Image (cartoon, rainbow, N blue to C red; front, side, top):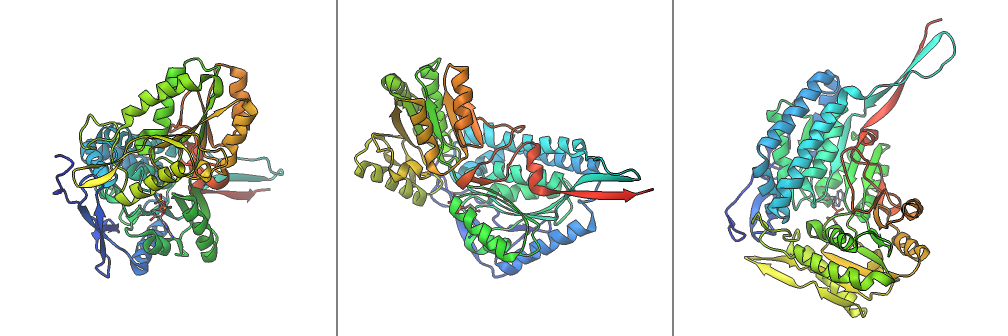
Length: 489
Ligand code: ADP
């Protein structure tokens, strides 16, 4: 199939109680592929009564104990079966992900799907390895501190890693024994729906995982305002995260974990061991996934004495991220999520140009019936205080700024107001520690960019939100500590 073939059509109905369901109103919205330019699914657009039904079912399933009190062995086996089924259908999932949001199928196959499989396996393994505590209490008593599931977890996810971020939320929430109601991004819901089908086939009891589809402001809002949600986990923009805090607070108290935006800096010091490697990785950090990554290192600070050498290598590396047909396995960059989003990214590039910056690349392109493609852009000479240095563009756009001193670079890196990620390139161990300690970021990568793994927590500080995905710490989003104090004389 080429980029212009518009015949692929997926089931866009929601999953409630293990079954595919239309909205009660019958309303649906087209899921437009940025690859084909055509609709690839009619996405059910759920209203509050549909969402309430999903939450009721999830709450009843939790109460029943069918999953929440199932043995660790049973839960582990089910999550492994989900992982196995997903792995078996990886080509199908990778293709659906590419058609949904435009990333190259090579990346969806090599990163998104295997990453999601690994996430389910990792949390399956963790289920029976989390032990409680027996703290010191007065003689004649014993206290047990155990981690218990919270109940119904609402999860709201973005379109840049539709399957993988859904897995980051669902796997630990289910591993802990919760029921989940997931609201995927309306632009890219297909793989989350397919995942819920797989979970049913793998024997996950009905109502334990539901996927409610539709726009954020209606379907998402109904989910957030349902008082029966015991936890809400979110990945998306800072503006929505702020709104969710308010809407949640109006509804009641519940556990919140909100991974919001970012504007991450990559600091390249003149004492770096390998300038070419730093430049190649910097291009990856800025342009990977069309730059649609919340932890993208889109502000590149380069010590003045190596700017020319770095830029020459960076320009060459950027060429690797020129967009091409996302369905061609040889492509290394694809379409932005929508033509509308490409308009926004283009407008940001024009804003930088109007502010006197020099722009290299950044050309808008059409492929087949879609014009959601933008060449990697390099912005040079944008004044340090310009709004775009603190604004998440979420596209293939990197600004390069020279600096003179370590103090100056740290100051620029920390001024965005976000705190998700940062990178440091240096051959000095002392500088690596000194600078890392000062950078306000959930993850600081040293001599690499955007380091991430299943074993390490991912999330931010300040306007990047709070709560952590991945690692054992993700359980904090989905479990509470319970003390059972036994007085025995
Ligand atoms: P982006 O700007 O990257 O699309 P958003 O924060 O708008 O990020 O979207 C992330 C997720 O949040 C999506 O699933 C979207 O539907 C959902 N969402 C957006 N607005 C709301 C809202 N008001 N209430 C609940 N969910 C929302």
